[in-house]
Image (tube, rainbow, N blue to C red; front, side, top):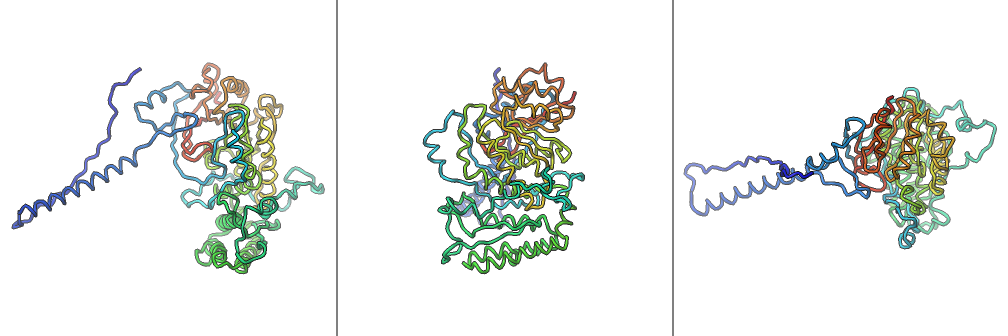
Amino acid sequence: MMFNSKPKIRTRTVAVPVKKPLPGTDHSPAIKEQHRQELKAQVDNALAENNRTKKAEAVSEPKSRYNLTPSTKSKSSAKLTVERKSLSVSRVQQRKRKVTPTTPQWASSSEEESSDEDEDRLKVRKRQKTSSSIEPMGLNRSLEPDMKRCIRIQESHSSKEEDGLPAEEETEKDVQLIHGLEMSRGEWAKDFKPAFSGSEKNLLVKLQYPSSSPPEKFETAIPYDNSNFNPLDDIYFSIEEIIQHYLPSAISSVLSSETTGPVRLLKRAVHKNSPEDFQSALNDFNEQIRKHMDDRTIPAVLDAMHSIPLSLTKRILAQVYQRTVSPHAHLLRRVKGKETTYGELLPPFIHSIFHQTRLNSTGVFVDLGSGVGNVVLQSALQTGAESWGIEIMDTPASFANKQADELRARAKLWNISLGPITLLHGDFLESPEIDSVLPRADVILVNNKVFPQKLNGALLDKFLDLKEGCKVVSLESFGGGGKQGVRNEQSIANLFDEERYDSGTYSVSWAGESVEYFIATKAR
């Protein structure tokens, strides 16, 4: 079908003031030429402002490796895609925001083996550099308060009991914390230089978190590569989160001072090359945290908190990822086929999904194809839900369990109780455990963007027995809304209502552009 109509052009009328000559003014050619030049300059300025406005309003079509259909196309081209059949009237929500990703910003190769050139390049140890996780107050989002969730770890229960283990039983879970110290020593020592010149060895320091757990150990070292793990940044960012979210405003406002706050004093000590001042400032902060733990100030703040801010979620997940996955991230590039192409959904995107689906501590979350477990861990941390994941590929599945162990240990540092975590290694089509949990699930996530039609069809068979109200979040429509989705509307349209959304920019690891996703609700 051809469209011959010309595209509509937005026009804007610009009023240009014209100076009138005053009575008695000289009308000589020189004066007239001056007036003409002034008028021309005014017109040029107005036109330039008009062009800047139109450019700001214009939206360019994203170039995605998956050839996605963005909702921001021009009206004439959008008609060809928006008018496609769907389970219900599509509702597009556009969100644009810039976030600091905590996962590597590259897409996995869809070929059977990565090229030798890629392998050699990626053998270099890289960790994702993360900026301060403190978001501007307008963007410092939280999920809706969950009044049934107690975020603080209750002192009446031992950490072993919270993990479902007898209190008297000794387990390796108590020693799983990977200290920042371990990231700049041993085989990684060559990647760092001392933060304080003139010292024979790096200064060893400790950071006290808002809990009764022992402090975390760090070396005052700086990476040669800015994309590598930075111990000093880890300390700064963690202190910022503690001040922002664990203390009353009267105390946090003092500690947030740009002149006398602990982060400012620590940075000043590094600038002055004074390890003594650095140690002193950090010791003072640690004493403050211990004091406010002992006087019940921090526990009181946590007990009044019924949702975890996104910035705090990002900080904890970044710490876990940096210590377990980032040093070996190049191993994730090797895949066997298109359906095992690896990619990660970033925390702000998942935060939005949790908000839309209203997942909370009473719910059950399942991630089919959970990769290194990022989303499962975010679910357990941020919502407190019973969180399940299953991954078929060996390497991501092994990383997922390492991340889970680190999160359990690190959550104790941050004094946050987690929802139950179960991570499986296997095929979600052939897993008895997944078959048993799906009928109880409240939210199911499946990144099926590159799944073949046969696999999506097999998933639909499993979804037929979901409970009413269960929400299936996917990156490809199951009801004919996408190019690769199963188009058998006879079998699903009577059971699910589906809506389409745009993620906003910087939501996935393989592209900076916005991606489309779908939420199908079991309605009947």
